[in-house]
Image 1 (cartoon, rainbow, N blue to C red):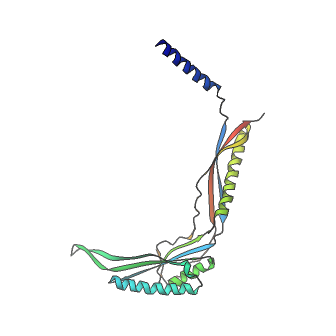
Image 2: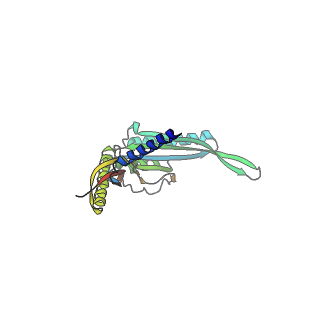
Image 3: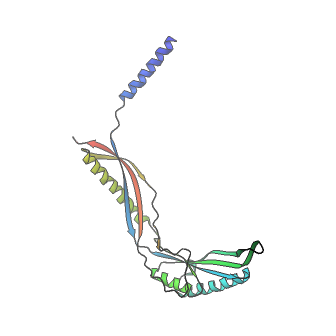
Length: 237
């Protein structure tokens, strides 16, 4: 028992001695940086939709298909390639209501909804595509987006600005503390924030076909990124 106690004491003493030998960690500065770049969009995405209703699902679908054919023909006349035109969210659903006398849900008819999505690199066509849709049976503008096809260059620039911002902050803090930034110890790139592409919010907004066309302005998109950094602080001699 005595030998065991002595061995344990020696182990504890050696451990304490090893901890004392370790050099102190250098002071560090933690800062975050953010970079933003304004980018002009180079593609427009337009979504126009149709809602038709009839007593039977077949009649509602036929009316919807007729309007869709007219809309697609008008869009093709604008010179939009077939590959850039897509049908989305085709849906058939009953129009229901609760009948108080019958005390049950009854079906008054059927509704067919359909959305046509068009993409074009000719931004000036966005308004014309909307007009073509509304003028040929569309009664919904489901969305109008102005997007950037390739954001890699803007992301690189935003990242460069974010790191530079973090370093400036670290240098100011180090100088105020009577020292300077020695070196970068750690750098974490946070997730790139997706730019908000919608220049005109029109989701699920019904539009009358004879309404005055809305002014279209593509504006700019913001590509941003943030970083977290840790720098070694060195005292001035």
